[in-house]
Image 1: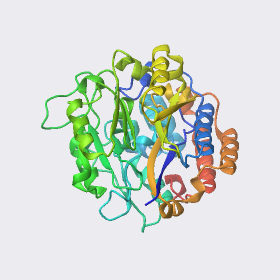
Image 2: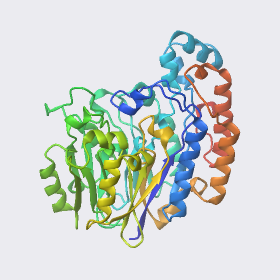
Image 3: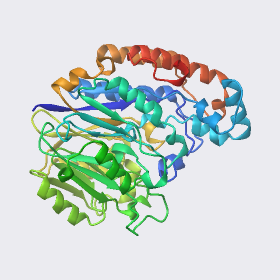
Image 4: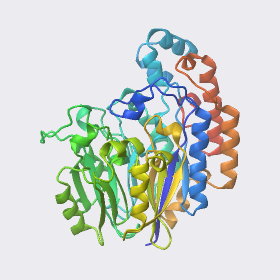
Length: 441
């Protein structure tokens, strides 16, 4: 059956700022308290979506979440009118206001884990929303994420959107950022590779930074997504690379169809995992980058592996990279050498995503991959699909509502809350999503 991979990118929100909230994400920590430009962040994201859509890669849009998250601040004991809640949080606990204002939902690789219909026992596309329980600023995203995905993938005959796992440490789930699907053709059953950092039965754990994904969570997601157990592999991420800033597996590995592009230190017992994949994946092709060419530190600095690996009609592949990879001499030298080798990757495309990168999110963080058949593509909400009209409309919308400068102190401005709600109310009309935000209900 013919099927295509459709990328749904998260749109950076109006409160995009640098707060250093993500312990273990070194870019996030390094750029704490720098001045951000939400307008530029959104335009960089929209431009990437449009460029890829123009190149023939189907592209959808996932909207930002409502921020500041007043409901979260109320849970934390702040009361009064919404504006008063924000003012009290700013005065008494600015770090909590920062967490409640995070635009981290832009990184929709953490929104959910997706199972194509070819892999599901019931023949539907399944999406299980991630609980993101390891960090406060992300743990509150799940309800709105579920509402958004249900508005985009609304047809029950084709799609099943599952709520998040219980929000407890033992079931920490970070979504597709720790998940890969490998196979020869998108429309044929594939092998799903779930990567975890923690396993209650395994003593090998990182020592410096936390491992966010648990094996128990990955196993539960596989069950919810109705995966055939024979098509699933669970593997542990190398705890040593987690301690060097590889907080999600998509910072050290990316796959597409039969290709797994990864660092040689990405996984525990990597030779054994590659042998297992070779037995399950037709024409499996691992591309392992040696430390002698690119160190783990260089991979984290440039987000070499937080790239998009996309299939072109002739079977060759395009690698989508952030500008930081091009600017690093050793990494760029390796990438150009890679093009000359015997593998499907024959083109590099670089995007300026500096606003996202400074907060620790590259091209792969910004997108959720969903394999769809022709019937399933027709069942997706068409208003979210990128085209010339939507591109122009979104740029005008960003110009109308987004600020071009934001500091920590600006989060206390009650007008920012008003601007955000007006913008999102208009965006739900543009994308025909209905009333998905709490303030709309």
